[in-house]
Image (cartoon, rainbow, N blue to C red; front, side):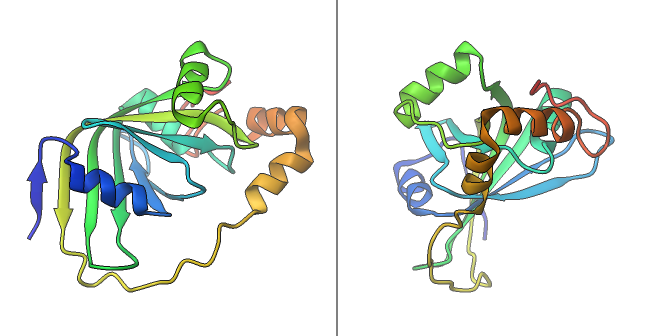
Length: 182
């Protein structure tokens, strides 16, 4: 049975901080639903009603486009080790775009000022609902390591190359919505 909470309780925070992967889902009224896996120690719990994650340059930027158009955002965590559990954070999000003062302040406060190569935004989710469910059918997996591929790609492209890639691939969503990243 699912249980709902008004905020991120201490036991939720502890569970979130142990996870190595999370999933982000977003959509706008007339867009496709986007669901993306995230990792690389990107997520931070800000307080009992908000989290953020460092968003890296990728082949698209559906989440930022959906946040501009609609704002709804869900983040899901699954226990792949230990006791079964699924935790979802529902709410509204916003993109703190790289190069803005809001981005710089959050990067300094929550990431020690250390920016992963290819970073393009920090996504903030303000939660209005926290829900847990059993996760009994989620399989057990052993964590092996993070994939270095995206970070290496960004390092090889360099700052100018990644910026050019973002201009080419991240200005609009797959449904033609502006991302606000440029």
